[in-house]
Length: 302
Ligand code: SAM
Image (cartoon, rainbow, N blue to C red; front, side):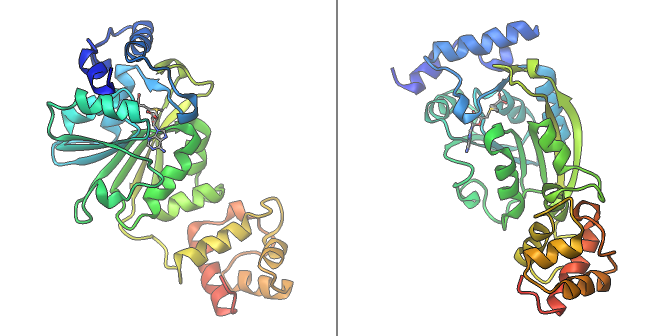
């Protein structure tokens, strides 16, 4: 039996299932079994089965009829279905070939929904949305590659205007940590946008339930970075160097990581207005940018 015919024979879609959480979970399991499939752990397959959470994710993205939404990992199509009701266009990219094929059948009668088979880490974004078209990224991401996918879209030439993703709570917290308490991931996220945790999601909202709590994170992507830096790659080389020994004072850390004399590292920090005894996590984005400019002026090859 082909995956497409499996999908056609599927009697109920996830969005039609009973409202009770237990019913939702068993319905998702039944749906998979009918398709002859098991959730693939290696692909991070934890399917959302709580209608309330699905609505909350779409609402967090303010998804409306003027929006083109890219969804990564549609899975059984539960979030796709909610997005399809609200958005002008939905473009979903699924790595699991059987699910992608089945979803093409499920959404065949909705021409504003297109299903693509591919890897979000490799697929050219231009094949999903033309460069001139604004879009939002909304997804319940597979944990194993969630950070890398968000990063790929933030660094893309054609970035989404808004990102709403369900990720592991700790990842959401690192991405949205307040300035002055940010790790490398937080600095990188704030360079590209304003992150905010919208809500937490309990393991019981998924089938099968993961071991960890998740969070819905919204990032309002800056049209251009909020700080001036000589080059993005040089900026991140510097920030990575600063975080190479996060518990130590920046003067010594930068001198060691960038192979610069300690006096030179100290001089650049002072020029940037940063006390050389501070640690990386205490710096604001503007201070990192000032340090980058001071380092460039001192001849650092970043
Ligand atoms: N959106 C569905 C939901 O909310 O129920 C499924 C979410 S599940 C956490 C993650 C989905 O991403 C799975 O369907 C999985 O097959 C898919 N996936 C995993 N790795 C992927 C990748 N690199 N590119 C695209 N999709 C991927």
